[in-house]
Length: 168
Image (cartoon, rainbow, N blue to C red; front, side):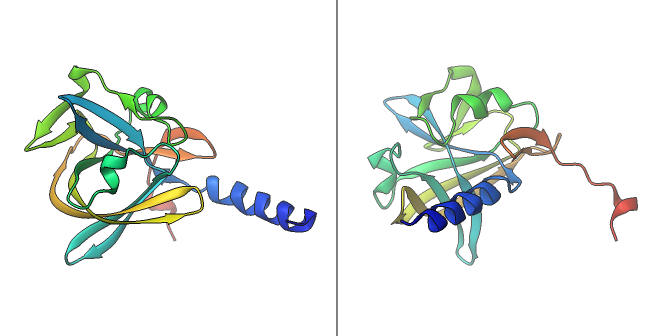
């Protein structure tokens, strides 16, 4: 890669990582323990069937998630759950979550107090660069009505506030 290309790639990476996004943690059950893994991004993929595209760090993704039919949870964290986000950063290995932080819905573990919880079944995956994009069919959804989602923007956590008087 030439110097100009490297600089352009660095600038693009800087701009992309500065985009605001909701913080999501993937949860899987292994040997009666809940493992949490930070998602780099989560996006709705399809309404019918309901599906999500979940991007994770390819260097730390458990092989279990790459098997079609694997059950896992996608948890959109709520305000006040920054400590969980920090313990499950997308760039780090999956972390063991303490028992009081999670519960089961069927065979899928979920984080207590998460803003939204999606029970998913892995259908496929795509490897791109250093990332793995999981194609996940959503089989169940639960939401938490209090507070808003935890937002990450410019490597800082915060919350989203809407002031309808200022929207044009």
